[in-house]
Image (cartoon, rainbow over all chains, first blue to last red; front, side, top):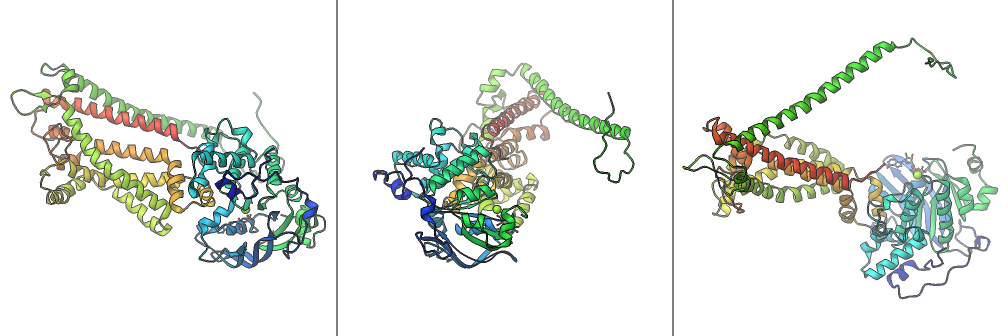
Length: 293
Length: 316
Ligand SMILES: Nc1ncnc2c1ncn2[C@@H]1O[C@H](COP(=O)(O)OP(=O)(O)O)[C@@H](O)[C@H]1O
Ligand SMILES: [Mg+2]
């Protein structure tokens, strides 16, 4: 479908006169493998995590996490409910600032920038780190205004430019064809799967480089889930994606790397194929084969 | 009909069965009680409407009164002078003037306070202020009336000598103070009912706290906010003690808040409590005024209902 995924979405959207790069070639998974724990190989590190701890009040929610999330790859986070997956994602865009009792320590860096530093501008950070939530949460506005919400906050642009951003974002989220004739109808009139893709379009429209997806398919039917997975496959060349999922098949088919967490600890992190076929840790083995969790 | 008698799959302690007849009797009693209460409140309302209509009609059938003169007249002088005039507009004007002053202050201030409480204030601060607001909403309005006479009016007259001893602005400001807790409390409820997921969605796009409050939360709570506004307007229109004490008793067709006016409720108090007879045109005229006031608040209620239906957001 959409052959025009902007390589540098932000640049292209601010200057629509710059022609878009040609469509990226079909992603070839085998060409891209490397050991993410070292950050070496053909990938660049996007998010570096070292000795990272997080708390809610006295509750120690994340314990000494160490990992490097590679750039422009899909990293899946799996693990039983309550093991801290959402907590980790919500620290990457500092969403946990909204939780008064939440606190964190250690190293959490995005492209070298320390995210926990008090000088980090969270508004700016969240422009670069988009988030998609478990339950689709479109604003009670029309479809167009939902997608245009972020650009209107951050960018001064003409009506024509804004139209282009909205169209491109909806195309990137594989929703354009379904809604192009009713951009002014309420977002809440869309189906659940369409609403979730709208939320992805809304996040993309701001021009992020990282997308955090917290169980984006758990409230969706199988067809919508398939649509979102196709979409992720198309976005993987341009965005660093961290996705939480309870669906083992989804993790194994849609991600490049997988991280297994248990009770606040990162138990295993590696190449998805390796984690799912030859897990090094017994707990991982038990979890992916469905023996607990 | 065969009795339903399932065999439980797992055998648990069975105890003794509850009496089915007793349960049925209890259900019937509760049903009858509920219907009784419903009928009672509907009957009271209908009685009031009937009395209002009958007495208002009696007024319009009097010789010195004409219906047309009532709804189009611009002079209201039922008590003084040789010739009595029953043109309702000066009274409506008094009501609207006081309400306008009150709402110009109470609505924006109430909404801003509500946004601050819901989106900015720390939970501890909110936990203190919310109950205080609800207590303020329960203060008898006669207190606000005295407050208007003894504090607001002298203050206004000190600021500007054009203000009369009785004036619409003073009454309006006191009504604003009276309405402020209601507007704030109800608007805050509406804002807080907006799901957290919408706020997080907006924060996630890099919106500031202010942008989240103004561009997402407030529009999403619009129907509740408008309902709060309309309730406040209805209370202001119907407010009696404050205007009877502070607005004055001379009906005049004016838009100047510095001048003395007489709102509709003020006139009714004057007739029922004052030295007017309880027969004759001036007595029955208060029923006609009451009916007019009733129609105005009914209109507000209907508008409020339309707005709620039109803008209601359903969050599952
Ligand atoms: N706002 C919060 N306040 C207190 N504890 C929380 C909060 N959010 C999550 N937790 C706790 O932190 C732990 C991890 O939660 P979460 O990150 O949501 O798990 P997951 O997404 O893996 O299911 C859970 O035990 C949960 O109860
Ligand atoms: Mg979670």
